[in-house]
Image (cartoon, rainbow, N blue to C red):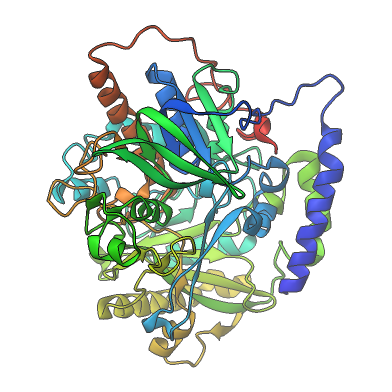
Length: 581
């Protein structure tokens, strides 16, 4: 099946290359972000590392609300709308635009190394993920406040949560990204929701995860059948005199003068150069890259840095500690109903999407789910559907996911090879409580599968776990759900990496604004968390910039309104038409 899917991905990509240029009428201007590598950039005011889910939103907000020159640096290329805008096809093509992270062998998972791909493209993981806009309960942020993050409770974040989440069940802009309900729903997803209701769960439509014991179809960062990436937040900035985007450049380290961040060292191919940041540096590279970059810059556990022969700028022992991720395992069942996304239909489906942006190509494959919680004596978990799986032909999958795992891990540079991949050790299922909870979620998934709605749909024999003992099965099949957080924990205690103002403790003019700051993992999908952090971070950093300037900023050039801006009409090509690479 893998070979067939790869072949169909190639066919779809060829169709896109053939069809897309013809879609534009003579004289129509297809806006693009300019190539920012020339003229050379030597200095800026605010330098943001990582044009990802948070970084793109943060960059636009800082240009809008301050007088600072903003430089946004991304290791990957510009957003390739021709490849990623079609949701289902984009999921197949995403390895081309991802960091191919691998964990260290996991002791509790039969010493398997688990892939954790993350976006390496403008828009970051929002350009390659499943687009689910189900952030979980707002009370998660109350947990942050209780853990020493004043100003980060749900009440404190009411404005940011209002901008970043779906309200009233209708289409809205989340930090400039349209959120909507899917236009395609597979028969399996429909039957799954009905089976959840039959098992006693509440039907919430759309399903945002705000309450446990609920089920439904997920809202998506999608509009008119196309992915909406935060890359769309950069449309409209291309001619602004205070904004620059630099792609294809990897930041190797942050530079300091004393305890103050002054810029970064970049690498493009074999060439290295430095860029000065007069107001400061913001790290927005994600929970796996941000701690690595800090350690390479001499900020982290002193013992680790000395072992790597890196000069210690600041001994911060918790940099790279506290890694949390949602971990899950599937229940796979043979289906009498062929998948709507089976390889034999890809050409027809691709043509349908190219013609009117409809059909199975608009799907994210994991369309429906349910959230469970302790109120019903169940672990805090999520079960979501896959109407097609590579694990077996003509089968469906229910992915059982722990939302509040007790296991913790680390991200550390390799002391013997600092230029190579970091050592990522999530410690999946290292705590017995996690193994017990995930085993219980597998049992719950089986109970849902036994309901009349799914039997009538056509579920047949269970393929996985089947007759295997569940503990043995988890060791062989448990895997990541791609939501790493927590490696640069926010707090006011001496061990925290950043304070509630997002400034790195012990340093000046250095901030972190991504999911690495989360003191505890959210009970939902983490794209919305990154948006909330970016929105809150833009306000906090802007206030600090204005405070250092000694008062109100001088008048600044008017900012072109983004087609994807909050309250504006959405762009015709899902917020990214101007970002075709």
